[in-house]
Image (cartoon, rainbow, N blue to C red; front, side, top):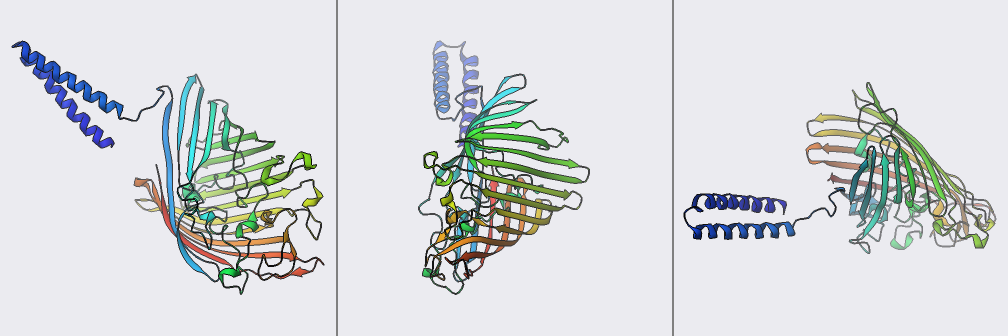
Length: 471
């Protein structure tokens, strides 16, 4: 449409030029010619007004506006131990989205602005399973990711209020020196968390458990995966300016603090820097939940007090001449809620501490002129990510088809190893990628006499390939 407007405007400009020339040359010869020239220019002005009426413009000339986003899609082939299939998915590691940023100068070092961001939730890979490719019932669903205002000072930092990321959000990925490869994959289990657990030897559709992989791969504060415990919430966030900048955009040391909802607060420290032949990145964050309504926890009138404490950290380093890099992430989630009814149904024990770690290594180098090629692999382990089983952790007979007595889940372990290749196409702001993941899980169960109950489950394999483009 822009090209058409430009072409039409060019034709109008030429018409205007001839109109003016006609008026100048023939205007002195006859009044009739002058009248014709007036009609020509009047028609031109009318056409220009029509064009302006169909052009998208800012509503406020004082506030700048930027449209941005990405499309991130792939084809995933999976095997749950018995069934194999392939889906076309929206990559949940960094989903398809678009947004608007606006800013305006106030005076001196002061400015203000806003951010609105929306997510396309169609076929999100974290929501797919053996029965749902993901496009039903969420086909075409759009959700709000960010909706906040801010006031900023170059010498101090930024104050935000509204729906925004908590300071702890993304602490286990956004300090990666590999840059945008985290949009291909990062530490979490987003490719299988929606799939139902399959007990070994139960190779039919009815042989699936009612529990999914996400029930043993999550922290306590949200239903998200073990590394992405924090999220976006309605609140107030303060972010400091960057200290010790090295002259490279985005580098430095900065701090964050936030509070919101019914008393949830968090704090973080992040660093990115480049020194001689090295790139460095790292961060640590803490979040404390006192919101009695988080995850349907209860309320004060029920003599219930929420207490969830979560900590996470990440670090990375790259040797620039060779492109070799190393990355590590760690996450911990503790549920110390006050109610005794939130203890294990048979053991009477409180929730175990969830702990997860991930380590990867690889190489990132421009082997061709089109952009960086990144190849990496790694290993992830998550222990006791069992927040999906409820506070008493009771499993009724048959909910896991291989277990026909009532049991309590007391712990779990999930292991993943992976290989990934990402090829940047710099001229098109695009990347193409292919990733393989193998995931294993173990459940720790006891019956009413506290005897262990064996319930082995099949592993999960997935290979996905696709691309993303930024705008």
